[in-house]
Length: 167
Image 1 (tube, rainbow, N blue to C red):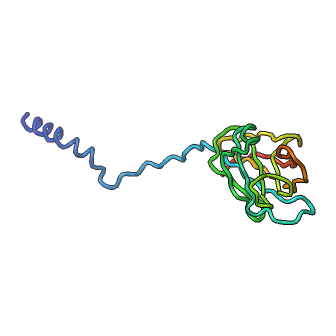
Image 2: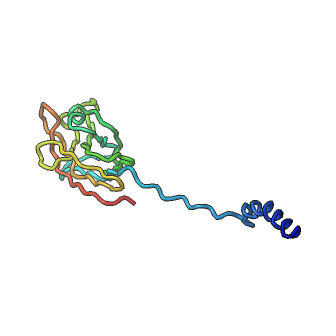
Image 3: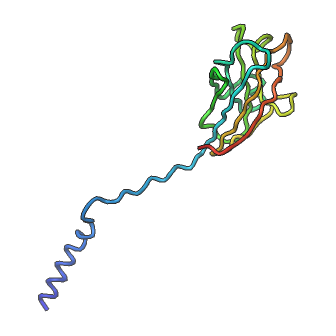
């Protein structure tokens, strides 16, 4: 009886230690892939047929609302590459407006003679497009030379818009 009681006591003392020692390295728990919370807006613009110059370093601007677009109160900007491509990453889901402008006369005003384009679906006014979580929205089109005109910014481009899963 003493022997059984002694064995029970030894097991009670060492059992917790044995459970803690796995005898080697623990297998790490894999880190889960984070769920995307933003989208991407990218694409490219080209000059209208017959236009001379370069789209390189044209300002591509992203706006949250039509009022912000009308007041040139952009959320973010980036510069177009020499081939007209651009990209905005980590864009929160929602509706946005986009334009591209190159100030050819360096007066810091969108006006006659500059290169300009805006995303539109009807050719008459700036149009919103949707950014979706985990998706790439592609906006692109033709940038035109603003003719001699006065008044609000012209809407003179009908680019394409598509949405696809981001990698």
